[in-house]
Image (cartoon, rainbow, N blue to C red; front, side):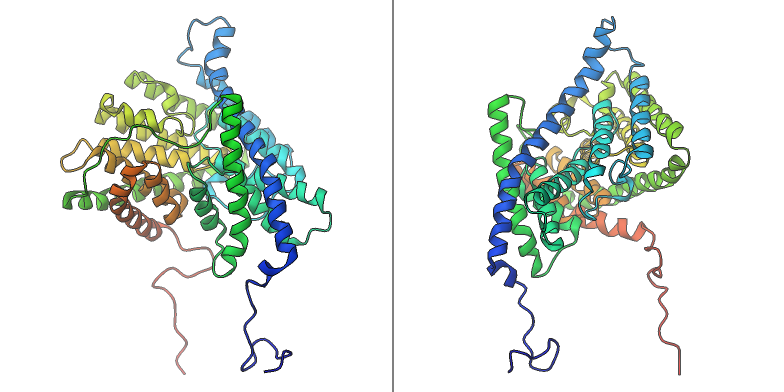
Amino acid sequence: MSADSPVGAPGASPPDPFAQVRTRGYIGLLAMAAVLGVPISVGAYGFLALVDELQPWAYTDLPKALGFRETPPWWPLPLLAVAGLLVGLTIRHLPGIGGHKPAEGLSMSGAPKPSELPGILIAALATLGLGAVLGPEAPLIMLGSGVALWLARLIKPGLPPQAGAVVGAAGSFAAVSTLLGSPITGAFLLMEVSGIGGPMLGVVLVPGLLAAGIGSLVFIGMDNWTGLGTYSLAIQDVPHANPPTVAEFGWALVIGLAAALVGTAIRRLALWLQPRVERRLLPATVLMGVVIAGLAIAYAQGTGKAATEVMYSGQSALGPLLADSAAYGVGTLTLLVACKGLAYSVSLSAFRGGPIFPAMFLGAAGGIALSHLPGLQLTPAFAMGIGAMSVTMLRLPLTSVLLATLLLGSQGLTVMPLVIVAVVIAYVVMLRLSPAPTGRPKAGTEKGPAPA
Protein backbone atom coordinates (compact mmCIF):
# COMPACT_ATOMS: atom_id res chain seq x y z
CA MET A 1 0.00 0.00 0.00
CA SER A 2 1.31 3.43 -0.92
CA ALA A 3 2.06 5.89 1.85
CA ASP A 4 0.04 8.39 -0.18
CA SER A 5 -3.16 6.37 -0.06
CA PRO A 6 -6.04 8.68 0.86
CA VAL A 7 -7.85 8.13 4.11
CA GLY A 8 -11.00 6.16 3.51
CA ALA A 9 -9.72 4.51 0.34
CA PRO A 10 -9.81 0.70 0.22
CA GLY A 11 -6.79 -0.67 2.06
CA ALA A 12 -5.85 2.70 3.56
CA SER A 13 -4.59 2.68 7.15
CA PRO A 14 -6.76 4.60 9.66
CA PRO A 15 -5.14 7.68 11.22
CA ASP A 16 -3.19 6.95 14.38
CA PRO A 17 -5.02 8.64 17.30
CA PHE A 18 -1.91 8.32 19.48
CA ALA A 19 0.49 9.98 17.05
CA GLN A 20 0.30 13.19 19.05
CA VAL A 21 1.56 11.41 22.19
CA ARG A 22 4.77 10.45 20.38
CA THR A 23 5.65 14.03 19.47
CA ARG A 24 7.98 16.37 21.33
CA GLY A 25 5.14 18.88 21.53
CA TYR A 26 3.06 16.53 23.66
CA ILE A 27 5.91 16.16 26.16
CA GLY A 28 6.04 19.94 26.31
CA LEU A 29 2.29 20.01 26.87
CA LEU A 30 2.67 17.62 29.82
CA ALA A 31 5.41 19.81 31.28
CA MET A 32 3.21 22.89 30.88
CA ALA A 33 0.28 21.10 32.56
CA ALA A 34 2.52 20.13 35.48
CA VAL A 35 3.89 23.66 35.90
CA LEU A 36 0.49 25.33 35.61
CA GLY A 37 -1.02 22.84 38.06
CA VAL A 38 0.86 24.52 40.93
CA PRO A 39 -0.45 28.12 40.66
CA ILE A 40 -3.93 26.92 39.69
CA SER A 41 -4.09 24.67 42.75
CA VAL A 42 -2.77 27.41 45.03
CA GLY A 43 -5.40 29.76 43.64
CA ALA A 44 -8.15 27.17 44.10
CA TYR A 45 -7.04 26.57 47.68
CA GLY A 46 -7.11 30.31 48.33
CA PHE A 47 -10.59 30.60 46.79
CA LEU A 48 -11.95 27.81 49.01
CA ALA A 49 -10.24 29.29 52.07
CA LEU A 50 -11.79 32.68 51.35
CA VAL A 51 -15.26 31.16 50.99
CA ASP A 52 -14.74 29.25 54.23
CA GLU A 53 -13.82 32.50 56.01
CA LEU A 54 -16.67 34.52 54.48
CA GLN A 55 -19.40 32.23 55.77
CA PRO A 56 -18.75 32.54 59.54
CA TRP A 57 -17.81 36.21 59.13
CA ALA A 58 -21.15 36.97 57.48
CA TYR A 59 -23.33 35.02 59.91
CA THR A 60 -21.37 35.13 63.19
CA ASP A 61 -18.73 37.86 63.30
CA LEU A 62 -20.65 40.59 61.49
CA PRO A 63 -23.78 40.54 63.72
CA LYS A 64 -21.55 40.56 66.83
CA ALA A 65 -19.63 43.52 65.43
CA LEU A 66 -22.95 45.34 64.97
CA GLY A 67 -23.89 44.83 68.62
CA PHE A 68 -25.99 41.65 68.57
CA ARG A 69 -25.22 39.10 71.28
CA GLU A 70 -26.13 36.28 68.89
CA THR A 71 -27.19 36.08 65.27
CA PRO A 72 -30.84 37.21 64.95
CA PRO A 73 -33.24 34.73 63.29
CA TRP A 74 -33.97 37.26 60.52
CA TRP A 75 -30.29 37.81 59.70
CA PRO A 76 -30.25 35.70 56.47
CA LEU A 77 -32.83 38.04 54.88
CA PRO A 78 -30.60 41.09 54.30
CA LEU A 79 -27.48 39.04 53.52
CA LEU A 80 -29.12 36.88 50.87
CA ALA A 81 -30.83 39.94 49.43
CA VAL A 82 -27.37 41.54 49.11
CA ALA A 83 -26.08 38.31 47.55
CA GLY A 84 -28.86 38.44 44.97
CA LEU A 85 -28.12 42.09 44.21
CA LEU A 86 -24.38 41.42 43.77
CA VAL A 87 -24.99 38.45 41.48
CA GLY A 88 -27.57 40.37 39.46
CA LEU A 89 -25.25 43.35 39.00
CA THR A 90 -22.41 41.03 38.00
CA ILE A 91 -24.50 39.21 35.42
CA ARG A 92 -25.80 42.46 33.94
CA HIS A 93 -22.68 44.61 33.87
CA LEU A 94 -19.61 42.36 33.71
CA PRO A 95 -18.54 40.17 30.77
CA GLY A 96 -19.46 36.48 30.88
CA ILE A 97 -22.78 36.57 32.82
CA GLY A 98 -21.00 35.44 35.98
CA GLY A 99 -20.26 31.94 34.69
CA HIS A 100 -22.49 29.13 33.53
CA LYS A 101 -26.18 28.84 34.45
CA PRO A 102 -26.34 26.04 37.04
CA ALA A 103 -29.97 25.15 36.27
CA GLU A 104 -28.75 23.92 32.89
CA GLY A 105 -26.24 21.51 34.48
CA LEU A 106 -22.47 21.34 34.53
CA SER A 107 -20.78 22.02 31.22
CA MET A 108 -17.32 22.46 29.71
CA SER A 109 -17.90 24.54 26.59
CA GLY A 110 -14.40 25.96 26.48
CA ALA A 111 -12.28 28.11 28.74
CA PRO A 112 -13.70 31.56 29.56
CA LYS A 113 -11.97 34.68 28.28
CA PRO A 114 -9.70 36.58 30.69
CA SER A 115 -12.20 39.45 30.75
CA GLU A 116 -14.87 37.06 32.06
CA LEU A 117 -12.85 35.77 35.04
CA PRO A 118 -13.58 38.71 37.45
CA GLY A 119 -17.33 38.30 36.96
CA ILE A 120 -17.14 34.56 37.59
CA LEU A 121 -15.14 35.15 40.78
CA ILE A 122 -17.41 37.89 42.15
CA ALA A 123 -20.64 36.00 41.43
CA ALA A 124 -19.22 32.84 43.01
CA LEU A 125 -18.05 34.60 46.16
CA ALA A 126 -21.41 36.35 46.61
CA THR A 127 -23.27 33.07 46.05
CA LEU A 128 -21.12 30.80 48.19
CA GLY A 129 -20.12 33.25 50.91
CA LEU A 130 -23.55 34.66 51.70
CA GLY A 131 -25.60 31.46 51.79
CA ALA A 132 -27.15 30.50 48.44
CA VAL A 133 -27.56 26.73 47.99
CA LEU A 134 -24.84 25.96 45.45
CA GLY A 135 -21.30 24.57 45.58
CA PRO A 136 -17.84 25.70 44.46
CA GLU A 137 -17.08 23.10 41.81
CA ALA A 138 -18.54 24.88 38.75
CA PRO A 139 -16.78 28.21 39.41
CA LEU A 140 -13.54 26.35 40.11
CA ILE A 141 -13.81 24.45 36.81
CA MET A 142 -14.31 27.69 34.88
CA LEU A 143 -11.71 29.71 36.80
CA GLY A 144 -9.16 26.89 36.57
CA SER A 145 -9.55 26.49 32.82
CA GLY A 146 -9.61 30.23 32.15
CA VAL A 147 -6.57 31.06 34.26
CA ALA A 148 -4.62 28.07 32.89
CA LEU A 149 -5.26 29.08 29.28
CA TRP A 150 -4.43 32.74 30.02
CA LEU A 151 -1.12 31.78 31.66
CA ALA A 152 -0.30 29.30 28.88
CA ARG A 153 -0.76 31.98 26.23
CA LEU A 154 1.46 34.34 28.21
CA ILE A 155 4.15 31.65 28.25
CA LYS A 156 3.58 30.59 24.62
CA PRO A 157 1.65 33.20 22.61
CA GLY A 158 1.30 30.99 19.54
CA LEU A 159 -0.34 28.09 21.38
CA PRO A 160 -2.47 26.09 18.89
CA PRO A 161 -6.22 25.86 19.63
CA GLN A 162 -6.12 22.08 20.24
CA ALA A 163 -3.27 22.43 22.72
CA GLY A 164 -5.12 25.32 24.34
CA ALA A 165 -8.16 23.11 24.89
CA VAL A 166 -5.99 20.47 26.60
CA VAL A 167 -4.33 23.11 28.80
CA GLY A 168 -7.73 24.53 29.76
CA ALA A 169 -8.98 21.07 30.71
CA ALA A 170 -5.81 20.50 32.76
CA GLY A 171 -6.50 23.74 34.63
CA SER A 172 -9.98 22.50 35.50
CA PHE A 173 -8.50 19.21 36.74
CA ALA A 174 -6.02 21.04 38.94
CA ALA A 175 -8.70 23.31 40.40
CA VAL A 176 -10.99 20.46 41.51
CA SER A 177 -8.20 17.97 42.20
CA THR A 178 -9.22 17.09 45.77
CA LEU A 179 -12.50 18.97 46.21
CA LEU A 180 -14.51 15.79 45.58
CA GLY A 181 -12.34 13.66 47.87
CA SER A 182 -10.09 12.14 45.21
CA PRO A 183 -8.38 13.21 41.97
CA ILE A 184 -9.95 10.14 40.34
CA THR A 185 -13.47 11.34 41.15
CA GLY A 186 -12.62 14.73 39.71
CA ALA A 187 -11.24 13.06 36.60
CA PHE A 188 -14.43 11.07 36.06
CA LEU A 189 -16.51 14.18 36.64
CA LEU A 190 -14.68 16.22 34.02
CA MET A 191 -14.53 13.27 31.63
CA GLU A 192 -18.31 12.81 31.73
CA VAL A 193 -19.04 16.54 31.68
CA SER A 194 -16.86 17.12 28.61
CA GLY A 195 -18.21 14.07 26.79
CA ILE A 196 -14.79 13.08 25.49
CA GLY A 197 -14.24 9.43 24.70
CA GLY A 198 -12.70 6.95 22.35
CA PRO A 199 -8.97 6.77 21.69
CA MET A 200 -8.57 10.53 22.25
CA LEU A 201 -9.75 10.18 25.85
CA GLY A 202 -6.32 9.20 27.11
CA VAL A 203 -4.57 11.85 25.04
CA VAL A 204 -6.64 14.60 26.65
CA LEU A 205 -6.98 12.97 30.07
CA VAL A 206 -3.29 12.33 30.86
CA PRO A 207 -2.26 16.04 31.14
CA GLY A 208 -5.33 16.63 33.29
CA LEU A 209 -4.52 13.71 35.58
CA LEU A 210 -0.96 14.99 35.93
CA ALA A 211 -2.23 18.46 36.85
CA ALA A 212 -4.76 16.94 39.27
CA GLY A 213 -2.09 14.85 41.00
CA ILE A 214 0.13 17.88 41.43
CA GLY A 215 -2.89 19.87 42.59
CA SER A 216 -3.64 17.26 45.22
CA LEU A 217 -0.09 17.51 46.54
CA VAL A 218 -0.37 21.30 46.59
CA PHE A 219 -3.61 21.12 48.59
CA ILE A 220 -1.96 18.83 51.14
CA GLY A 221 1.10 21.10 51.34
CA MET A 222 -1.06 24.21 51.73
CA ASP A 223 -2.95 22.52 54.56
CA ASN A 224 0.29 21.66 56.38
CA TRP A 225 1.63 25.16 55.82
CA THR A 226 -1.48 27.21 56.67
CA GLY A 227 -3.42 24.84 58.95
CA LEU A 228 -6.67 26.02 57.32
CA GLY A 229 -7.77 22.58 56.12
CA THR A 230 -7.76 20.58 52.90
CA TYR A 231 -11.28 21.60 51.75
CA SER A 232 -11.66 18.07 50.41
CA LEU A 233 -14.90 16.12 50.61
CA ALA A 234 -14.46 13.59 53.42
CA ILE A 235 -16.51 11.84 56.10
CA GLN A 236 -14.98 10.36 59.23
CA ASP A 237 -16.31 7.48 61.36
CA VAL A 238 -18.75 6.01 58.85
CA PRO A 239 -21.12 3.52 60.55
CA HIS A 240 -20.51 -0.12 59.70
CA ALA A 241 -22.63 -1.58 56.90
CA ASN A 242 -23.56 -5.26 56.74
CA PRO A 243 -23.62 -7.01 53.34
CA PRO A 244 -26.64 -6.01 51.21
CA THR A 245 -29.91 -7.86 51.71
CA VAL A 246 -32.77 -8.60 49.34
CA ALA A 247 -34.86 -5.99 51.15
CA GLU A 248 -32.19 -3.35 50.58
CA PHE A 249 -32.13 -4.06 46.86
CA GLY A 250 -35.85 -3.37 46.96
CA TRP A 251 -35.12 -0.12 48.78
CA ALA A 252 -32.59 0.75 46.05
CA LEU A 253 -35.46 0.73 43.56
CA VAL A 254 -37.56 2.96 45.82
CA ILE A 255 -34.74 5.42 46.50
CA GLY A 256 -33.81 5.61 42.82
CA LEU A 257 -37.42 6.33 41.83
CA ALA A 258 -37.94 8.87 44.62
CA ALA A 259 -34.72 10.72 43.82
CA ALA A 260 -35.62 10.91 40.14
CA LEU A 261 -39.03 12.40 40.93
CA VAL A 262 -37.75 14.91 43.49
CA GLY A 263 -34.69 15.92 41.46
CA THR A 264 -36.70 16.34 38.26
CA ALA A 265 -39.15 18.59 40.11
CA ILE A 266 -36.25 20.70 41.45
CA ARG A 267 -34.72 21.10 37.99
CA ARG A 268 -38.02 21.87 36.27
CA LEU A 269 -38.86 24.54 38.83
CA ALA A 270 -35.39 26.06 38.38
CA LEU A 271 -35.71 26.09 34.59
CA TRP A 272 -39.20 27.60 34.88
CA LEU A 273 -37.93 30.35 37.18
CA GLN A 274 -34.72 31.10 35.24
CA PRO A 275 -36.20 33.06 32.28
CA ARG A 276 -38.50 34.96 34.64
CA VAL A 277 -35.52 35.96 36.77
CA GLU A 278 -33.58 37.03 33.69
CA ARG A 279 -36.41 39.28 32.49
CA ARG A 280 -36.21 41.44 35.66
CA LEU A 281 -32.69 40.58 36.72
CA LEU A 282 -31.87 42.89 39.63
CA PRO A 283 -35.18 42.83 41.57
CA ALA A 284 -35.62 39.13 40.82
CA THR A 285 -32.21 38.03 42.10
CA VAL A 286 -32.77 40.05 45.27
CA LEU A 287 -36.19 38.41 45.65
CA MET A 288 -34.69 34.93 45.13
CA GLY A 289 -32.17 35.66 47.88
CA VAL A 290 -35.01 36.67 50.21
CA VAL A 291 -36.90 33.47 49.36
CA ILE A 292 -33.85 31.35 50.27
CA ALA A 293 -33.53 33.24 53.56
CA GLY A 294 -37.23 32.76 54.29
CA LEU A 295 -36.97 29.02 53.76
CA ALA A 296 -33.91 28.81 56.04
CA ILE A 297 -35.67 30.81 58.77
CA ALA A 298 -38.84 28.72 58.48
CA TYR A 299 -36.84 25.51 58.90
CA ALA A 300 -34.94 26.90 61.90
CA GLN A 301 -38.09 28.14 63.62
CA GLY A 302 -39.97 24.92 62.91
CA THR A 303 -37.30 22.50 64.10
CA GLY A 304 -34.96 24.37 66.43
CA LYS A 305 -32.04 23.46 64.15
CA ALA A 306 -29.63 25.92 62.54
CA ALA A 307 -30.81 27.92 59.55
CA THR A 308 -27.43 27.25 57.91
CA GLU A 309 -28.50 23.63 57.35
CA VAL A 310 -30.76 24.95 54.58
CA MET A 311 -28.27 27.53 53.31
CA TYR A 312 -24.94 26.81 51.64
CA SER A 313 -23.96 23.82 49.56
CA GLY A 314 -24.00 21.20 52.33
CA GLN A 315 -20.47 19.98 51.62
CA SER A 316 -19.19 20.46 55.17
CA ALA A 317 -22.54 19.40 56.68
CA LEU A 318 -22.58 15.87 55.24
CA GLY A 319 -20.33 14.39 57.93
CA PRO A 320 -22.17 15.99 60.90
CA LEU A 321 -25.51 14.98 59.40
CA LEU A 322 -24.45 11.33 59.30
CA ALA A 323 -22.74 11.44 62.70
CA ASP A 324 -25.75 13.10 64.40
CA SER A 325 -28.44 11.27 62.42
CA ALA A 326 -30.05 9.97 65.62
CA ALA A 327 -30.90 13.57 66.57
CA TYR A 328 -32.98 14.05 63.42
CA GLY A 329 -36.50 12.66 63.35
CA VAL A 330 -38.33 11.81 60.15
CA GLY A 331 -40.36 15.02 60.36
CA THR A 332 -37.25 17.18 60.75
CA LEU A 333 -35.51 15.45 57.86
CA THR A 334 -38.59 15.76 55.65
CA LEU A 335 -38.81 19.49 56.36
CA LEU A 336 -35.06 19.82 55.72
CA VAL A 337 -35.39 18.14 52.33
CA ALA A 338 -38.40 20.29 51.42
CA CYS A 339 -36.85 23.62 52.46
CA LYS A 340 -33.37 22.92 51.09
CA GLY A 341 -34.81 21.45 47.90
CA LEU A 342 -36.81 24.61 47.24
CA ALA A 343 -33.83 26.80 48.18
CA TYR A 344 -31.64 24.71 45.85
CA SER A 345 -34.09 25.18 42.98
CA VAL A 346 -34.26 28.94 43.56
CA SER A 347 -30.46 29.13 43.75
CA LEU A 348 -30.10 27.21 40.49
CA SER A 349 -32.39 29.69 38.75
CA ALA A 350 -30.69 32.92 39.84
CA PHE A 351 -27.24 32.45 41.39
CA ARG A 352 -23.91 31.13 40.15
CA GLY A 353 -22.28 28.00 41.54
CA GLY A 354 -22.15 24.23 41.22
CA PRO A 355 -24.99 21.72 41.63
CA ILE A 356 -23.07 18.77 43.10
CA PHE A 357 -22.95 19.26 46.87
CA PRO A 358 -26.58 20.37 47.39
CA ALA A 359 -27.69 17.30 45.44
CA MET A 360 -25.51 15.08 47.62
CA PHE A 361 -26.84 16.66 50.82
CA LEU A 362 -30.48 16.31 49.75
CA GLY A 363 -29.95 12.68 48.81
CA ALA A 364 -28.19 11.99 52.11
CA ALA A 365 -30.97 13.60 54.16
CA GLY A 366 -33.64 11.70 52.24
CA GLY A 367 -31.76 8.43 52.64
CA ILE A 368 -31.36 8.96 56.39
CA ALA A 369 -35.10 9.66 56.67
CA LEU A 370 -35.89 6.37 54.90
CA SER A 371 -33.44 4.46 57.10
CA HIS A 372 -35.98 4.80 59.95
CA LEU A 373 -38.13 2.29 58.05
CA PRO A 374 -37.69 -1.51 58.36
CA GLY A 375 -35.13 -3.35 56.26
CA LEU A 376 -32.78 -0.45 55.50
CA GLN A 377 -29.46 0.26 57.25
CA LEU A 378 -28.27 3.81 57.79
CA THR A 379 -25.05 3.72 55.74
CA PRO A 380 -26.53 2.10 52.60
CA ALA A 381 -29.50 4.50 52.76
CA PHE A 382 -27.12 7.45 53.07
CA ALA A 383 -25.01 6.26 50.11
CA MET A 384 -27.93 5.33 47.86
CA GLY A 385 -29.57 8.69 48.47
CA ILE A 386 -26.37 10.53 47.52
CA GLY A 387 -25.84 8.50 44.36
CA ALA A 388 -29.44 8.63 43.17
CA MET A 389 -29.92 12.37 43.73
CA SER A 390 -26.50 13.15 42.24
CA VAL A 391 -27.23 11.33 39.00
CA THR A 392 -30.64 12.96 38.76
CA MET A 393 -29.20 16.46 39.01
CA LEU A 394 -25.90 15.87 37.18
CA ARG A 395 -26.81 13.17 34.63
CA LEU A 396 -23.34 11.67 35.22
CA PRO A 397 -23.80 8.02 36.34
CA LEU A 398 -20.14 7.01 36.79
CA THR A 399 -19.31 10.14 38.77
CA SER A 400 -22.42 9.68 40.91
CA VAL A 401 -21.45 6.12 41.88
CA LEU A 402 -17.94 7.27 42.78
CA LEU A 403 -19.20 10.23 44.81
CA ALA A 404 -21.43 7.98 46.89
CA THR A 405 -18.93 5.16 47.46
CA LEU A 406 -15.41 6.61 47.66
CA LEU A 407 -16.78 9.06 50.23
CA LEU A 408 -17.46 6.18 52.63
CA GLY A 409 -14.01 4.59 52.59
CA SER A 410 -14.00 0.83 53.15
CA GLN A 411 -17.77 0.81 53.71
CA GLY A 412 -18.20 2.13 50.18
CA LEU A 413 -17.20 -1.23 48.70
CA THR A 414 -19.90 -2.96 50.77
CA VAL A 415 -22.70 -0.67 49.64
CA MET A 416 -21.53 -0.22 46.03
CA PRO A 417 -23.93 -2.83 44.51
CA LEU A 418 -26.88 -1.05 46.12
CA VAL A 419 -25.63 2.36 44.99
CA ILE A 420 -25.26 1.13 41.40
CA VAL A 421 -28.86 -0.14 41.35
CA ALA A 422 -30.20 3.12 42.83
CA VAL A 423 -28.15 5.23 40.39
CA VAL A 424 -29.27 3.20 37.35
CA ILE A 425 -32.95 3.38 38.35
CA ALA A 426 -32.74 7.13 39.03
CA TYR A 427 -30.88 7.75 35.77
CA VAL A 428 -33.35 5.84 33.60
CA VAL A 429 -36.41 7.34 35.29
CA MET A 430 -34.94 10.85 35.10
CA LEU A 431 -34.32 10.46 31.36
CA ARG A 432 -37.85 9.16 30.85
CA LEU A 433 -39.23 12.18 32.70
CA SER A 434 -37.06 14.66 30.80
CA PRO A 435 -38.39 16.27 27.62
CA ALA A 436 -36.77 15.33 24.35
CA PRO A 437 -34.00 17.75 23.23
CA THR A 438 -35.22 20.67 21.14
CA GLY A 439 -35.30 19.87 17.46
CA ARG A 440 -35.43 16.10 17.95
CA PRO A 441 -38.56 13.96 17.93
CA LYS A 442 -39.66 12.44 21.20
CA ALA A 443 -39.08 8.74 21.75
CA GLY A 444 -41.63 6.66 19.90
CA THR A 445 -42.61 9.44 17.47
CA GLU A 446 -39.90 8.94 14.86
CA LYS A 447 -41.35 8.42 11.41
CA GLY A 448 -39.90 5.96 9.00
CA PRO A 449 -39.36 6.58 5.29
CA ALA A 450 -42.43 7.38 3.28
CA PRO A 451 -43.84 4.46 1.33
CA ALA A 452 -42.85 4.28 -2.30
